[in-house]
Image 1 (cartoon, rainbow, N blue to C red):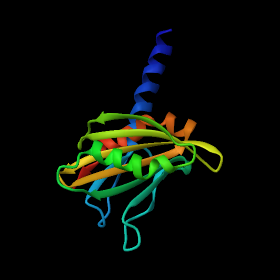
Image 2 (image 1 turned 180 degrees about the horizontal axis):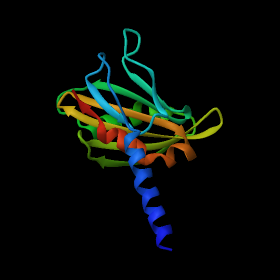
Image 3 (image 1 turned 60 degrees about the vertical axis):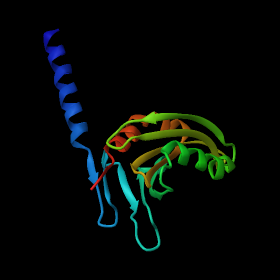
Image 4 (image 1 turned 135 degrees about the horizontal axis):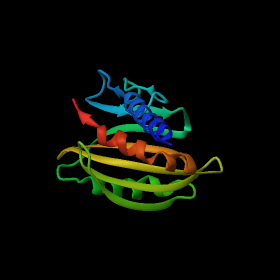
Length: 169
């Protein structure tokens, strides 16, 4: 019985150690931030350039998790909650099958709020989760995650980890 406990402890230590080691940093000369991707399954598919102002990432494939990071320049004094409400009113509520979720405060290297919502895409139930992170009184970064409802919900810990790791260079 003792040997079995030792084996489980070693597997736990080895497994958790390899998970931490699987994290990968992402940065680019075209962006002023860095993030930690929780595993090698997450990869960049589009980097900012003259045609695209944002970076895009997938967790294997789009339905498993898609992330778009945008830098939003706002009026002085605009809060992350203000930007979240504006996006809900002007963009998100027009998605097919839109169902508004809740807004929650978020604390990481940059603080802000998160907004969750559901929608339908090509007949499939999807969810979105946006982290609005305040960089300064005129800059808010929006980390926009979308994916199939059952898939993205399962990796909430990963989306939180990515948002908490977000930092300016």
